[in-house]
Length: 392
Image 1: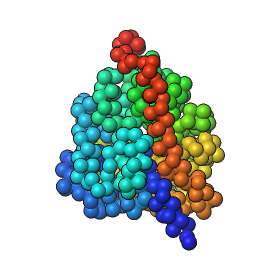
Image 2 (image 1 turned 45 degrees about the vertical axis):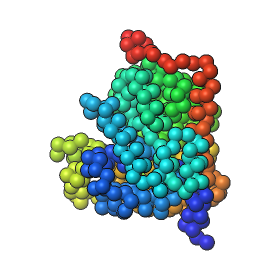
Image 3 (image 1 turned 135 degrees about the vertical axis):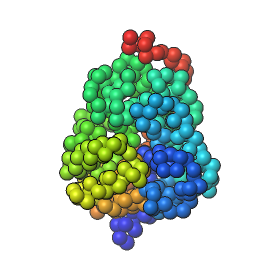
Image 4 (image 1 turned 90 degrees about the vertical axis):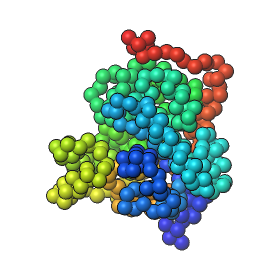
């Protein structure tokens, strides 16, 4: 039996929990949520990284759908609600394949049924507009993690890719973390500055996650996790979910991406624009300047390092499909997860290691957040703190 055969066999029992997929935003950008125009029941290779046939081929058993909206939108809260509505419509359209999941028990039930557990994560604290009431509303609508920032700072937390302002978390930012603990919403530290990571770990009484981040020691990009933070995950109980984005995993791609982003902006596009027009500009740039290519082995290098620093009990996968223009060789779309597992098997990872990586760690961490929430419910009431009252 080949390593790839062994990987596929393992995934039938312990499928992938992927921490981050931007399909809802891609559907907004491409077809303004006309789900019939991008019917994921059939392959959408020409348009998307994600559809149901390829999710099945890739052995995905649970997906955190990102309900991301850009941080420069003036109407982030209603736009986030539209994203949530998109996920709900996807689940309603495909009940044989997708199952709404709010808890770790729901994830296990979906696995038993052979359906893909569908969870939601809000990508960026701008989606709550500095309101703990909005945070609670998102939780009530099914959001089970929130990334504290996206690429820009929020009023109460510093991003990894913006100029430091708060020095990590402000007093209100720490209150956001505490309220997330009370609710049972996972604190996601992808995209945040290392100071914010450390402040969140100091504050949170529940395990945290990194929904789509890799190792800074392997690729020195600010979106990645420093070793001193990885070292704290065992005490916290959290999970770092490795991402596949070439510009975060391959050092040579960091410089190339900076030049490509500058080129997009010079042509009047946002550097994260994934529309067909922006991609034409990107492709023309790539023809003139061939991009460095990441591979399955590149991603495996990160996982090897992260296992050495944090331990195998604190690792997961967050591919960031449909949120990136480029993907590594062998991980072109959501069908590629078996290739990564095969590479890890060849490197000596055991079946038990891989079961933790794909399924068990991610399910455990959500269940642990639920346990913390139940305990806090006995002693804590909803917080009505405001940014103005705590931060002045």
